[in-house]
Length: 394
Image (tube, rainbow, N blue to C red):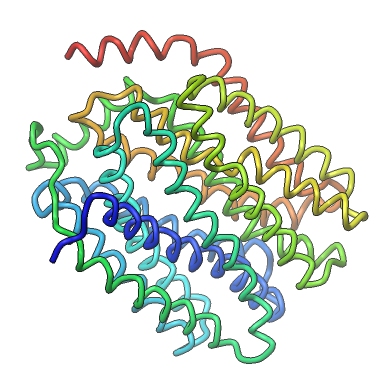
C-alpha cells in the first residue's frame, strides 16, 4: 500500500528533520570533543569540512542516477549511508577516521536532501512553493535545533549521542518504503559528465544569484555550529550555555520559517531575501558587542535565527522561480554545491580566525558575509526576472 501525495510529503520532511538532527548534533559535539582533547582550532575546523567535501565529491554524479532510478532509491541509499556512518563513530576515536565518517555522512545527506528537495520542488504548484519549501526548511530546523541538546550527553558516555542519532535515523528511514517511486522530467541527456557540465552552465546562467543565499547559509551554519563552540569555550562560556545559544538560533529559525515562506509567495523571493539578509547582518554585528551579557546574546541569536534561518529554503524557492522545469534537478544540485562550498569555507575560516585574531568577535565574520550577499542581491537581482521570462519560453 503506497502513501498518498500528502502522506509522502510528510514522510519526506520527517526524513529531513532527522537529517537535521544528526547534523545539528555532530558539528558542536565533535568540535567540543576535539577541543577538550587539545586539538588546535584550525585542525578542528578542517575536520568539520569532511561532511561538505562529501557533498562536493558526489554532486557531479547524482543527477544521472536520480533520473535513471527515480527519487526513492536515491533517498533510501543516502539515508542508509548516514545511519551506518553514525553508528560507527564510537568504534574508534581518531581525527582521520572521524573525518572519513563525516565524508560518508556528507555523501549520504546530500543524496537524501537532493532527492527530497527535488521531489518537493518539482511537485509543488508555484503559489505554494514557498510554503512547501519552508516546511521542508522548518522540519530540518526543528531537527537541527534539537541536535545540539545532545552535546551534554558526552558527560555520561561519548558514544551515547551517536547511537541515539543512528537509531532515530533508522526508525524514520523505514517509513520511506511506504512511498511509491517517481521520476523527474526526462527531457535531458545524462550520459556523460560533459552533458552534466553543460546543464550546470545553463542553470547557473538562469539562476546564479539564487545560489548565493544557500552559500551564505552554509557558511553561517557550519561556522556557527562548528567553530563558535571553540570560540565560546575560549572566551569563557560554559558548554551548556553554548548549546543554549545554538538552540536559540535554531528555534528562531523554526518560528519564522513558514511565515517567511508564505510572505515570499505573496511579495516575491528577492524582496524577502533582501530584508532577511540585511537584518541578519545587523543582528550578528550587534551580537559581537554583547558577548559578555547572557540574556541579550541569547536574544540576538534568536532574532538572527528568525530572519536568516530561512535563507537556504528561500534560496531554493528563488532558484525554482528562475529556472526552466527541465533543469530543476540541476538547479537543486547547484544549490547543494553552493551550500557545501559555503560550509567548507565556514569551519576553516572560522577556526583560522579564532586562532590568529583574538581581539575581534567571531560574529563579525558572519555579519560581513551576510552583508556582502545582500549587496550582490540588491545590485544584480533586478536582472533576474527577465531571465525567468526568457527561460519560460525555451
